[in-house]
Amino acid sequence: MEIEVISDANIDKVINTIRPVKYNNLSYRFCVSGDALRYANKHKEAIPQYLQAIMKDRGNIDACIGLAHSYKALGSIEKAVRYFIKANTIKPEFYLFLEIGMCHFALADYTEALKDFISAIKLAPDNLEAQTWLAMTHEELEEYNMAFLIYDNIIESHPDYLNAYINKGTLEMSIDKYAEAKNTFSQVIKMNPDFYKAYFGIALCFDKLGMYNEARRYYTKFLNVKPHAEVSHFVKNRLNKLLMLKRPRLSHLSLVN
Image: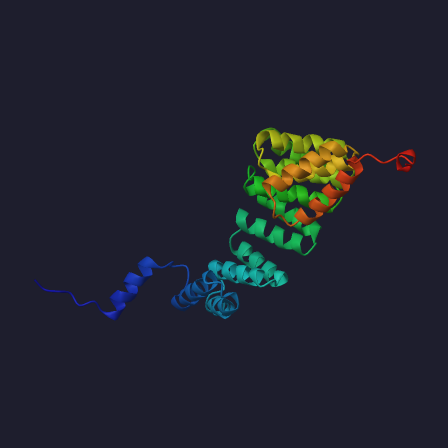
């Protein structure tokens, strides 16, 4: 039986059937190298590899996305936006609009973020993450009615999506609607008794409403569920103050022998 010797040309032909044909060989290899470094959390080292990949093939969308993620991980949000937008120009996708929107949100450029999230939702109308980001952006723009409308629509269509309740309740608290927020957090607790954020939220509401017995109750529940939370120190201090309010005050006569 005669064995065929594989020539260099044949090897290249085999490689071309395995790797994406839309990139030239060097661009692909630089991109793979960048990916390997990024997945190892070596974002700074990955950047030159991605840049080389883009120089070899400006249509390498994977290199643009990898480069954007590396910049984002390093806190260079402006540069991350630039390359997410470049990737989205090559091929518009829901995921890229969402990433661009989150970057603009982080940069407090809420007007641009709003456009990005709307574009993302047009491509994926049922995506709850994009809808939530859109509502939060309306909050930052102080367009509270729009934010409430989105949260209410999410709750109506996906009543088990707890983040919508938490965000809605937090917004209600931020505009001093503590009674409404109390009811919102109460709905969360009914659905998930272990959702510690709801205990903290409802405790704050009762506290602000002057309903101190209920506030103590839910602060205690919060600590039982999440004893080492970042706000646990505040909760413990507040509980101590509320317990002091509970103690009966001695009259002047009781101090007389």
